[in-house]
Length: 297
Image 1: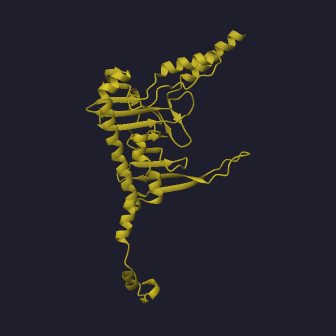
Image 2: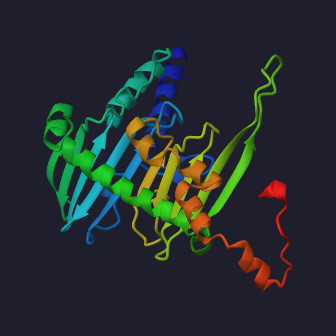
Image 3: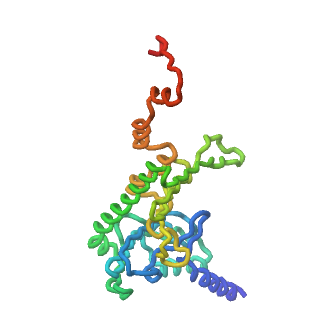
C-alpha cells in the first residue's frame, strides 16, 4: 500500500509538472515565458524583452530575462538566468518522492551574464548553446547594449505620454495599501500603490506600477494589439518587466510611476512657461485691478 501511494504521488507530480513552464497567472497580468517554438510569426523585424523576478511558486522560474530579436526572418533568443526546466522537474520529483523540502529549485539568477542563446532561420535551428561562459563572452555586450537602448527608447515614449497627458489619456491611480491587522502589528504610516497607463497614437499601451508603495516602479510593460505573440495569453508583446530587482533597470524605470503621480520637472517647466499673466486674466474677465498693499509689494 505504501509503495502504491508513492507511485501515485509520483504520477500526480509528473502530470502537474507537465503543465508548468506554460501560462503564468497573477492577480493582474497573465503571461508566458518566451520560447521560439511559440512565436506566432518571424516575417517582420522586431524586438521584444521580458524580465521576470517574481516568486509565484516552486514550479515557475523566479528570475529570468529574455531578449528576442527578429531580423531578416532570423530569430535570436538570448536569456539571462536560465535554468533547464527538465532538470528542475527532475529535482522536484526527487524532493517529492523522498518527502523532503527543497530550496529554490531555480538556482540560476539574473546576473548580467547571459547563459542561453538560440538562433533560427525560418524556424530551422542554426545555433543552440546554454553555457554561460560561451554565451556571455560572445554575446554579453550585444545583449546589454540592445536591451538598454531598447528599454530607454520606450521609457522616453512613456515620459512623453506624461508630458502630453491630455492627448495620451494618461490614467494614474493611487490606492492605499491595507495595513497589517494582526495582533501586535506596528502602527505604520499608510503606503500607496500607484499604477499608470497611457496609449500612443499607434495604439501601443504603456503601463507602469509601484505596487508596494516604496516609490520605486518595479513593473513596466508595453504592448500592441497586432497579433504578435508567443502563445495563448502570452502577455505584453514588446516589453514586460515584472517585479524588477536589478539596479541597472531601476535607473531607467524606477521613478516612472511616482513621476506620473507627482509630476516631473519638465512638466513644471511647461506649466511655468505657459502660466497666464495676472493682467491678461484681469483684462479678459473685465476685472477691476486693485493696487497691491505696501506689505505685499
